[in-house]
Image 1 (cartoon, helix red, strand yellow):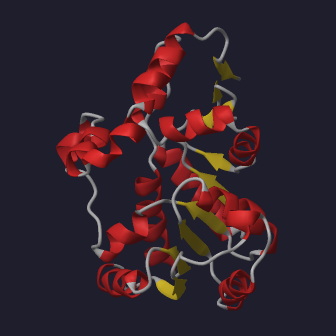
Image 2: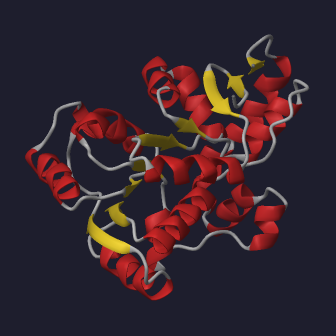
Length: 255
């Protein structure tokens, strides 16, 4: 059984990308519904303040350590997390599985028109993927006020009638987590992952940090340089590390 790490009440799997992919491969084969959440330090700190969000994340079937700060915070308490497993890398592995096995992929998120661009790029790079559909993420629904909207119901119906195997939900935190939580029981998709800006990257509308920043665990710095207005959001990282140092029994390993 995979060990887990409890970080301020958010329970994250201490795993590797290879192990996650093995689980996803089997779950796709057996059509076992699987929700994936990808907490980083910003998400952990938000969940620390909001019990409902914390509960939603902890209900995920796979909860992976997306942020490098998560690894550093655990290390400060003598806990080694095997590796950083990002939502982006997990999504790319899902694309490979879909390409190899002809699985059907639905893209939900981004601005109107972004889905079309993503589909065009995916079709060239992964000809084996069956694109079952796409829809922009700018609609009101249960991720705003808890009530299902008419357009939300139509989106769920479209996903289900298209026999989707893999669903990318790119609303950003916390909307994507709320939407997945509210709709997972009425969705027929096998793998449902909240993966932020992945659809934008697939469409060529956004870029991931250069490899050197990723290897050094400095994606946050690249984002800050690219968009200085993120400074308030990025301040959560030092705050997280400070609280990790002085916390007592708030970061612990679960056998």
